[in-house]
Image (cartoon, rainbow over all chains, first blue to last red; front, top):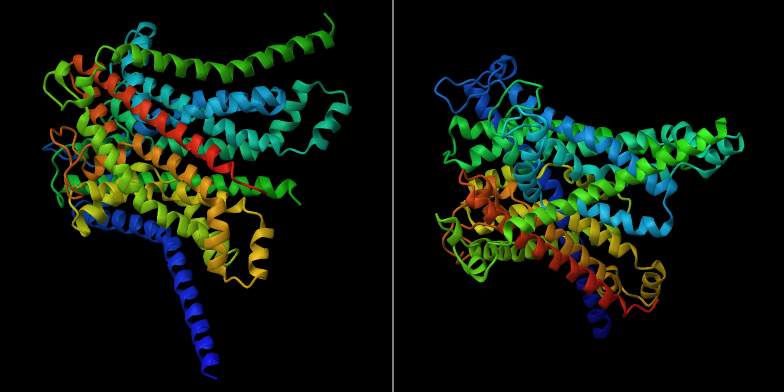
Length: 305
Length: 285
C-alpha cells in the first residue's frame, strides 16, 4: 500500500518536472517574441518623445536634415534619399548578376560544377561588411575616379557597387530555388514544341519562377537598405537630397552610426533622432520582408499540390 | 546563316554570360583579398598583434580588439546557445504545429530580416539604459545574443529534424517521457549539427560592428576588459576607427586588422567543419 502511494507520488513529481521543463523551453521560445516587442517599445518610446518636441510635419515636409547644427532641420528625406540611392546602385549590380548566376547554376551547370561554385558564391555574403567598406573606400573609389573624373572621394556609387557584389549570393541562392521548383513537365512541353533551350529559359522557366525571383530581389533590397558599415565608411556624412551617385551623401544607417560615435547624452533631441530614423528603417525593411514572404508563399502555392 | 545556327550561337553567348555572372564576383572577391593582404602585410607583426592602439600608425596594435572580440563571443555564445537550443527543442519536439509555436515561428522569420543596427538601438534602449548595464561588455554580448538567436534556432532545428522519428518512437515505446526522449535520444544525436550551427552563428557575430557601435563599444581602448562591466572594443570597430581616420598611414593598419579578422573567421569555420566531420563518424543509422 505504502509502496503504491510512493509510486504515485514519484509519478506525480515526474510529471510536475516534465511540466516545468516544458515551461522553460516555451519561455526560451518566447524570448524572440519578447525581442520583437522590446524593439517596438524602444523605438516608439523615443519617437513619441521626439514628436513631443518636433511636429511630424517638420519631419515629412522639410527638405533638410541638420539636427547637429544651430539651425536645426528635421526633414528625413535626404537620409531616405541616400539610402534609396545606394540600394538602387546595389540592385542594378545584384539583380542581373544574381539572376544569371541562378540560371547558370540551376539550368546549365553540371552537378559537380554546381557543388563547387555555389558554396564559393556564398562566401561573398560571409565576408564582414567592414572589409567591404575598406575595399570600397581604398580600392573601388580611386579606380572609379580614373573613369569618372568628377567623382567625389565619398560617394554613393562605390559603396553601392560593392554592396551589390555582397548581396549577389542572396539573390542567386533564392532565385535558384525558385527556378528549380518549376516543374520539369512544363519545360519538357516547351522543348517538345521545338523551342530552343534558351527560349525555354526566358519564355517558360523564368516567367514561371518570377514571383520567387521577385521575392529574392526584395529580400536583397531590404538587406541593402539595412546595410551599415559599407556606407558609413565610403558614402560620406552629408545628408543631401540628390539622385546623383557621384556626390557624398548620408544613409539612414550611417546617420545612426555617426551619432553613436559622437558623445551624445541620452535624452537630448539628437539622441532621440536616431530612434526616429530607426523607426523609418524598421518600417521599410519589415514591409519588404513581409511582401517577400507573401510572394514566396504564392509561388509555392502554385505548384505544390 | 540558318536560323538554327543563329540559335546555337545565341545560346552559347548566353551561357558564357551566365558563367561570367558567377565567376566575375569571385574574381573581384579574390582581388579584394589580395589587395588587402598587400596593403596590410607590412604592418603584420608580433608587435601589431600584441600591441595597444597608438596615435602613431606604425606603433599601433590590435590586442584590445582581439581580446574584446574573444570575450564578447564567449559571453554571446553562453547566452544565445541555451536559449536558442531550448527554443528549437520547443518548436520541434513540443509545440509542433500548435498555434503558439506557429506564432513564434512567424515572429522568428520577421526577426531574421531586421537590420543589425536596429538590434543596436534595442540594446541601447534596453540593456544600456533601462537595465543599467552601461556601455559594457555585458550589454554588447546581450545585444549580440539577440542578434544571432534566430540563426542559432534555425540551425538547431535543422539538426533536430535529422534525427529519425523511428528512434523517438522506439524510446516512447519503452515508456520514456517526452523530456527523456529529448534529453537522451534527440539532443545527443543532434549535437554535432547544433554545435556546427552555433559556431557559424557566433562567427557572424565576430564580423558585426554596427550594433556594437550603437551600444557604445569604444573605438580607442588602451586597456583589456577586466570584467563584464568593463568598457570594450572589438576587432571590426578597431578596423573601422583606422579606416575613418584622415591620416593615410592608418589605412595599412586597417588592412592588417582586416586580415587578422578574416583569419579568425576562417579558423572558426574550419573548426565547425572539422567538428562536424569528427562527431558525425559516430552516427550509426
